[in-house]
Image 1 (cartoon, rainbow, N blue to C red):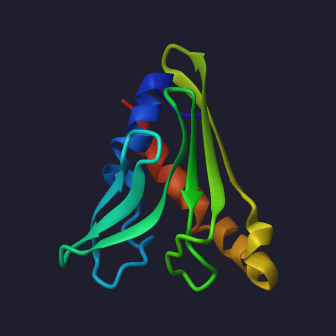
Image 2 (cartoon, one colour):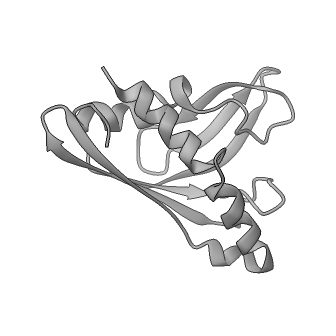
Length: 143
């Protein structure tokens, strides 16, 4: 649950990702300077590094503001971007009141990691995984 309107929660998730995405969740060679989701169908999901290079994470597959967002997560088990590899992150935003939104999050198709799937699941379920990411988002969306 996020203490924000549905519209605000969606905007913070997409347009405000740089305010809340944990800097340590980054695969670039240079430290992350900025996180970006381009707010449109087929928009890029990427990071701009401190050295000016860019590091892709995926792209926008479904764009349905302020209700639903599906992102391609194109990071392999080796923690490298691969445009031929794809799992999905679906985020739905359901209004529970004027200033309260239920955010449902699913990272699916982990079986595409093959034998590395159980280890990937363990890492993303760990305290520093998606839980940390969503907690920092919820904090940023308040207010």
